[in-house]
Image 1 (cartoon, rainbow, N blue to C red):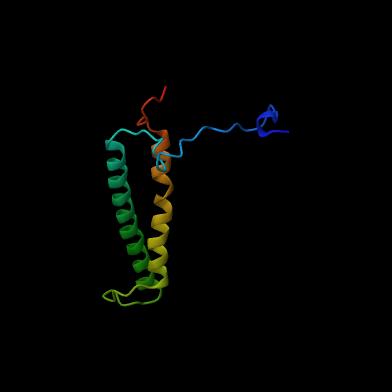
Image 2: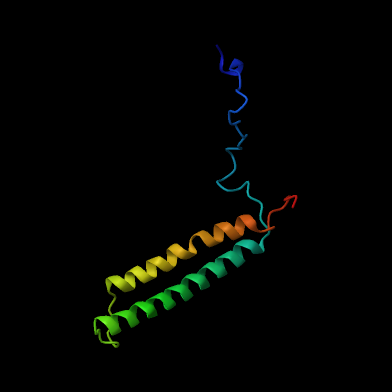
Amino acid sequence: MSPQSVPVLPGAPREVPVDTAKPFGAHLSMRWWMPVVLTIVVVVAISTLQLLLVYVAVLLEVGLVNKDPADGSLTPLTYLATNVAIVLVAPCPCSSWRGSRGFRGDPH
């Protein structure tokens, strides 16, 4: 049985033709300003959340552990605060990118 004569089942996923000559992501067609806006928004959001969460972590450490406020060393709690900020921001560009109308040819 040749590969061309294999029947396609009704519920089976169909293969989408992919041009392998194009680089990865070249099939995405966004307006030129969308990546610029997303980059700025992500950088500002991560920086703001990191500052906010690190300040909260420092206040907790000063209040609960009596850490010196002038001590600028990083502790496990401040590391956790910076990493949580990144985790909270990571899904935002994907959801705003998919939900936007920045795609050319989008019928909606």
